[in-house]
Each structure stands twice: as C-alpha cells, then as structure tokens.
Amino acid sequence: MKLFLWLKMWIVASFVVVPSYVFASASVSDTHAEEETTHHHHDDKSEAHTEESHNHVHKHHHGGHMPAGVMFGHMLDQAGDFMFGYRLMIGRQGGDVLHGTHKASDHAIINLGCSDTIKCGSAPSKMNMKMHMINMMYAPTNWMNLMVMPTFVDMNMDVRGLSGGAGHGGGHGHAGISTHSTGGVGDTTIASMFELYDSPGHWLHLGLGFSAPTGNVGVKFKNNGHAAGGLVHFGMQLGSGTWDFMPSLTYTGEHNRWSWGAQLSGTKRMEDQNKSGYRLGDMFQATTWGGYRFMRNFSVTLRGIYTVQGAIHGDFNTFNARTGPMDFPANHGGQFWDIGIGINAVFPRGILHDHTLSVEWLQPMQDDVNGYRLERKPAFALTWNYTF
Image (tube, rainbow, N blue to C red; front, side):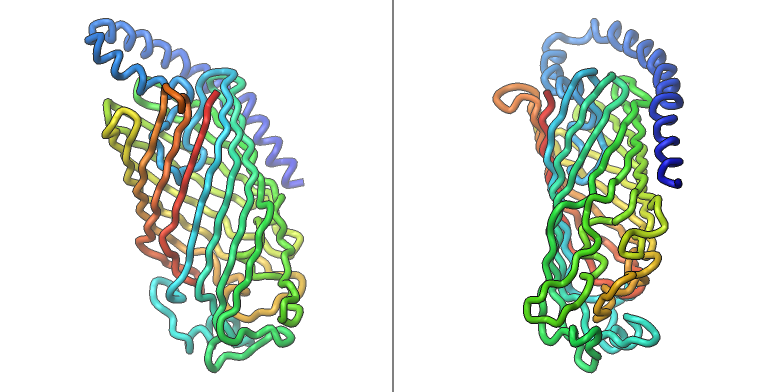
C-alpha cells in the first residue's frame, strides 16, 4: 500500500506540479535569453567562434564538466535527445576497524563489537566493491528527462580471526584470513528529472528517482570447505531488497572557464523490511564543487562531500553465522567526509563528437561510524556518456 502511495505522489509531481512550475520559469528564461542574444550581437566574432565549440555540448546537456562521482547531475535539454553511458564506481575499505572516529582494539571488538551475548570471533580486514552502471536517458521534452540505470556489482571481503575470540554459527569461525566474494545484478534505478530554472550560465533541476530491488539479498556462503554459513554479511548482499525513493536537487553554473555546482540528494527506504528481514538505513548527501577549464576540451574539478547514513533496521530472518561486527545491524552507517579531485574531457566535434569522459579520485577525510566498522580507503569514479 505504501509503495502505491509513493508512486501516486511521483506521478502527480511528474505531470502536474513540476510542469506548471517549469512553464512559469520558462517564460522568465526566454526573456533572459532574448536580452542575452541582443547583448552578444556586440561581442567580438572571433571570441564567439571560440566559445561556440565549447558551448555546443550544453546544447545537449548541462554539466559537461561535472565530477564523475555526481549522480543525477546533468540533463539533456533538447527534446528527442538520447544519451547512453557507462559509470564505474570502485570503493575500498581496509586498515583499522573504527569505533566512532577512533581505532578499536581487538579486545574491544571481541567483547563489544557483536552483541551483549555473543563475542566476536573475527573481523573484516579488507573489502573491495566494484559497481558497473549502464545509464540510458531520453528527453521527451526540453524540460523533462527519463532515465533507467541497471547496475552490476562484484565484491570481496577478507576476514581475519581474532585471537581470544570465539567461533560461532556451527563451526563457521574464521581462522587466519578467509576471503568471501559475491557478484551479480544489483538494484535498478528509474528516474525523472525536471528543469526548474535555466538562464545563461545557471541551471537548476529536480530529480525524482526510485530504486527497484532487482539485487539479490538472499546470497549465502558457498560450501567451499566451510560449514554451511547461511547468509553472507549485510554489506555483501547485492542490493537493498526494498523499493527506495531517491530525490535530488542540483544547481550548476558556468562563467568563461569556471564552473561550479552543488547537489542535495537522499535515499528513503519505502518498505519496513526486505525478504531477508531487514532494511538498510536512510541516507542523505550534500556535495559542492568547482571546476576550471584549462584547455578547450579539458577541465579539472575539486569537490567536497558530506554523507550520513542510518544503521540497519531489523535483522536477518534466517541463519547467519554471526562471526563478526559485519553481521550485526548496529555496525552500519555513520557520517563521512570526502574530498574529490577530478578531470573531465568534453568533445563537441571531431571523431569523438558528443562524447564526454570524467574520472574522479575520492579521498576520505574523516569517518565517524556507527558501532564497529572497517575504515574507508580512497575510491574511484569513472563516467563515459555519448549523446545523440
């Protein structure tokens, strides 16, 4: 019932509320555009020709020089345009297990990292995640875009045994280093984006998205020498297992060689639990960036990111080995601060006509985790898009 209510609200926002606002703002934008056209008749012709090739990409979408890690960051602004793209996100964790912002000792993990009645027998030592996303976007009008983005994920985690800890779950304790891997189809995002404001050098748009639970949340340990260990750790399941609402509000600006932007985004879980008995915590993110175009086709960006995510609600409703902090709901989520450094390439003409390529290095600045969690390592994002 709750899902139908959210979908009804989405439809109303898509076809009643947002269009009325867009049409109102469009008349203002047209006035500004007319004034801008009159002004540019007095500009030097050679300067206009230089900027023409750079601005051509904005005829197709706003945000050509956007950091690779920003989701829902740009729009196609010509009715009938299509965009096909690929996005790669690589995340890593390793090093110390944290409690809040501080390193946790093995003694503390054993006695406090699991529960009041269960001592931890192991702890994660390393985790790698790769997320591959196929981005397909279409502009039925010049103020609305529709997007579908399936994902594919693969993950692996190294788990180490804790000296003095106890093995649990039918002999599924970890001795030395043990590696687990999972992979497959992840969740699928469907979204609409609406242009709220468009004037020379300034753009604002709203994103209304949903994440469909196409990723498996019932992945189990394989019998590769271990006793049957039940469900794999929360963080290695392939999706959220719930329908999720994903709104965003994005502003971008540009003047000469400089560009900038900001985005507020979130994820709201729309169901009380998934088929495995739990739901992930809600998430909110705020980010802002600035960029400089140092060549006609190339720019660099610097970005700051703040993310907060709640702990997991509920718990596994079937057997899980409960070997370490990664198997307990309270040890998920937290507050995170990052800095991103990126480089972007936009090709308005030539053999790579209408292709864009962006890469970004994301450096964690601070982790303030819920419970006991492995600290984060630098992450990497790559985005390629082709508009036609």
